[in-house]
View 1 (cartoon, rainbow over the protein chains, first blue to last red):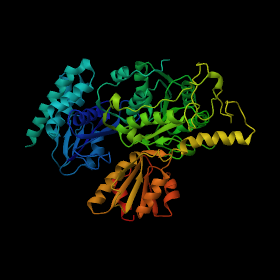
View 2 (cartoon, rainbow over the protein chains, first blue to last red):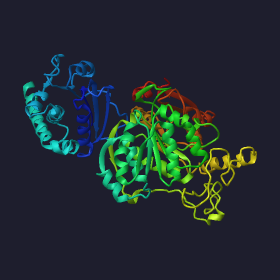
View 3 (cartoon, one colour):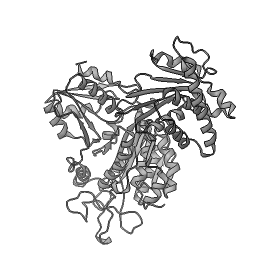
View 4 (cartoon, each protein chain N blue to C red):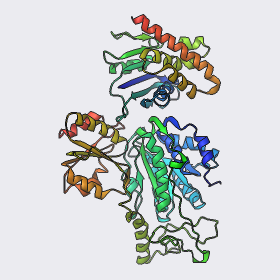
Length: 181
Length: 394
């Protein structure tokens, strides 16, 4: 088993952190091997950012993805860039408020991550809502493992907010799957 | 400055035994485990996280972090700290490594143990700052002027960034020579699981300090306390031993002796032979599927990863492909490569440069088998399928 995950958005959204949380969940809180790589522009905010994770039950040689099993997009620009790499069976997840043009002739899971984060009082946890949605849509990692990884990776004083965001994301992910059925 | 290693404190600062961290940060962990007490550096992409991690963690174990004005100052501070009794290190990338070259030679000539982490990026010059390369593999061997021996390790995984930084300190302390961890932007900016080795599993080597009667001490000669050892005993400044440290050719007492051929020959032969005499012991490699191989990849660092993937694809197709990964690139394992060349028909050397380590491979292997360079530049690692093509004869 080898799964390749790409998360993309713009700098400042926490794209790298979400990849870090998923990689850590797989390799520290579960028994998989995982590598996470990233690329981003020189800007602290804005510009395209992406985080890529490979999760495998075998040793991981080449550490960059050669395909995409699941694409999570949090900005139009990054979605337009990376949609070219998707296969027919790639699972696509977007925040439809941030990626308005997402009709590419294949099923798209819609998770209003930013709206959910705002309803929790802080847009900053948009990425954690996405991590939650990833967990329930992709189904590869145990919910508890990802939750522990979230708690382990965010500042202590924001633990509760992040847990809420994660749980709301799990729910939104389940709903997005239902909508496509 | 506190130089004594405090294992309990180090463990507290490093935290959990199993973590998911960056390659650069793993070099910080390795340094702390080895007992580094001084870091002098100047931030540069993709090595900045090493300085950042050291700035945060080193003071917490009682060590000293200084951001210097540039890389020339950084390596100079590191050398000074070593003479003050510290285990010291710095971290940089291509352009900074170039600036360090003069004092790298000074550390060789003055037999100053220290560790340089070079998170290689593409060059020449400023090149592609955020992208990885293996462009400095010859620079570490020949970049400073004059005759010397290099000690250079190349990690392929984040775990090895920890292990090889510890090993670099050990080699450096043992031979009183600078040692370099030649990682790169790919491994430096990769996150993977690491397991922090337990204290009982850590093998640490510390320089042998002078203990002989102060009047009988000779600073730059064979050890006065160990038999047949060309590494002199180290007299830390302030301990009362008379020593004099200069980059000029010096006699055994350390005083300049620049016009006498025998003095120079004796000195430079000793500082190179202290390493070359041990060349057979200084082999650190990983061998995969070599027993029946017709074709072998000889590889190191990040490039070993796509090479291993290419080898696996080829094995599934029934091709007899193996891989020899150099963990310690310098000193170069001549005898091992010669033996490999006699056993296989073809050696392929993939590198993220236009062909560097392929040259010492050719030097010893070309009489016995075909040697092919598989270069890739521009800040991207080879794809496994790109390397697979070389197995079909391009």
